[in-house]
Amino acid sequence: MKLKALTFLLALLTLAGCAQSGQNIPLMANAADANATDTPGPSAPKIALVMKTLTNPFFVEMEKGARQAEQDFGIDLIVKTAAQETSIEQQIQIVEELIRQNVDAIVIAPGDSLELIPVLKKAQDAGIVVVNIDNQLNPEYSKKLGLNNVPFISVDNEAGAYLSAKTVSQSITQPTKAILLDGILTAKNAQDRKHGALRAFEENPNITVVETQSAHWKIDEAYQVAQEMFKHTPDIGLVFCANDMMALGVIQYLDEAGRTDVQVAAYDALDEAKAAVKAGKLAVTIDQQATRQGYLGVETALKMLAGQSVPPVTLINVIAVTADTLN
Image 1 (spheres, rainbow, N blue to C red):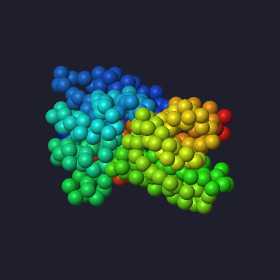
Image 2: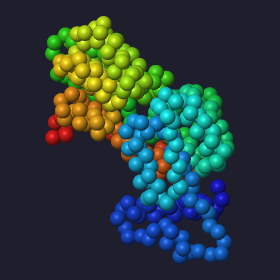
Image 3: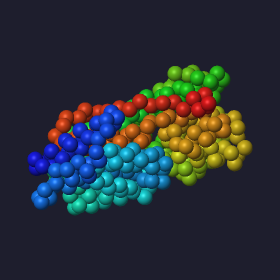
């Protein structure tokens, strides 16, 4: 990176750090004007945030965090999303377009842990910094293709799902059948959440997991899956959903079926899920601080562009949201 651009990036980080510590500093535009000359200065870094979709409120919150970082650091933020969380090919096309636009960095929440790796390697080869948030890219396949030095920012999904399932399973004192609704099977976060929930349920001898099935993170699909599962196994008493969207679909089915004897545990702490917790329709959900993930993703990209070292993995705390914590 050219010296002027590096100096600009370091100034951004310094000023933003002062702002967060409460110091009174001028806006970046004013700071730049104070040293203005006839020679054009370097432009603000262009950082792209690539998410799965905006149909899930979780990613709306993630964008809010990135937008806050945009304000704090004075960068040029580009936000791109696919139509749905399953639109992996569209995410690949978005990254291809960002390579053609010659952005400085890509912060990506990949819909799949494998399929995005080749195009992200192409981006890295083009000199674009890559930061991975939310769903982890497969480390072994990344190493095989030469996609290196990609920091990962998220939560411990296995621990978060364990906390969700453990919270609800502690109240189970009679033999109870349970089902799990997965996300995208090739996504690392979906795999981790499944393992965490199964581990928690296995610790309670009263719980028998009778079926697991993917609903691909979607409300409508979860409704249909629940309808089928309860049709052939009507005495299900416990459901773990790997995200809130699927839990909302299950709750819709249970409402329509008049079932009030089924406990549902979920993951994401969307506003709609919190409302369901308050209404007694959802036992627990997990806050994985989507806003924080978006903010740190942009901040990390900026540090890398400035030549600063960043940790290879940053895990944010998860928080169990129950009726008790909301009161």
